[in-house]
Length: 139
Image (cartoon, rainbow, N blue to C red):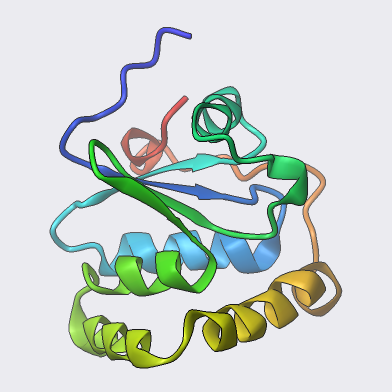
């Protein structure tokens, strides 16, 4: 793989065929006024490489993954809260939910994740970003 990872960007891995996940990515892009994030689907070559490097089995992952280069990675509700810290508007206030026990937060997250295809639908293939947004996605 020749794709070089951006050193100054946080990487969000998401389920590329999930309608809820794709809508979440669009929402994040819209509220990422500081241009903090880059994106890759879990199904992509780079997504598989990044999860493999971190010992994450994508087949067992019903989650968004946030990778902070040189720092750590986060999954499930913790990833969502970490992402919210960077969003414009009142969305950064969601970080205050981190006081809730992770088990409780992840329980709610898992309920939604386990039903996301049933409730929100599924695409046949990963989304194709518009030419304007292509720079935000890792190949």
